Image (cartoon, rainbow over all chains, first blue to last red; front, side, top):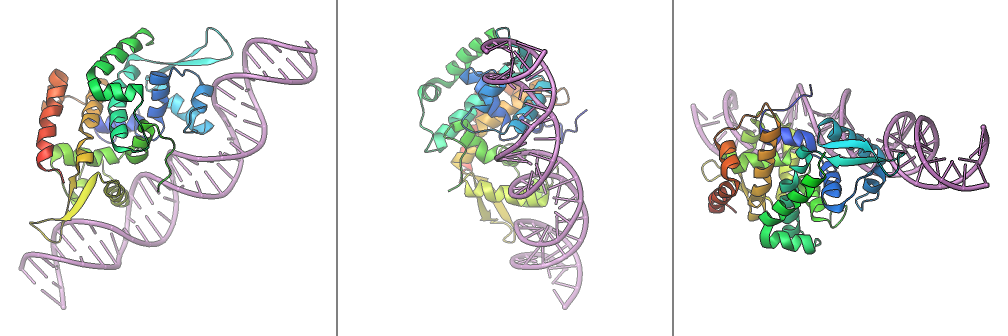
Length: 135
Length: 135
DNA sequence: ATAAGTTCTTGCAAAACGCAATAACTATTT
DNA sequence: AAATAGTTATTGCGTTTTGCAAGAACTTAT
């Protein structure tokens, strides 16, 4: 059993994804269609390989991600969200909205504007999409 | 200017509060009526004094918190949320909901149950409350 | 003066991070 | 079956951040 700092749900959640990288991996899977180690490595934030390997193993252990061999290429692995992982969607969307609102260098693109106009419908629709590929 | 990893709003947001402690301080102010250094130190998660001092200065520099001398006790400081800080409320509430849903040791109390029943009304009402004491 | 309360700094050891190199594994090519 | 290429890690090492204990700086109360 891992040590948790307290029973506060916020504290427990931060014990899992309270760092600078975990939610970016979640974002890549959730919003950018990325599924593999090399695709995560390619993201603009340039996560280091050892950090990526560590986060993937933590997220898998926490049952947020599932790792499977790719059906197309059997030397490749594919990472998918579980329902627990897909349920992070509202958090990711809220963070995206706040970040876009308060960072001048983060212009809102299609999704960002849609969030601004009707956040709950974005969450509802993306949630349906995610449901189709949840493991 | 601080180095930001990318212009992605999620990445920029995590550059600010993507750690295990910042959102717990925000929680204390937002939901628990805490306002002072010693009150933050007293929280059950037991943040270290140097980490607390560092996080408070970062959050102040990022214009999420404002530090003022207490009107009641002039040897004391009081930390308040800015509008930018108060706008973190939806994120905090969503994290709280997710944490309560997936952590068996986080029983839902009054607020947790209210979030489960009608999340958007909780956010709306608390947002109004916060607006009254925003700096 | 002394004591007590509050906020913050310093020193030091431990853990996490960042970067480069390279290993392990599978599939493909020669 | 040897060599090559692609994917997913692991290792080593130096830097940064964290965690913990001690105590300093400041204000107020006695």
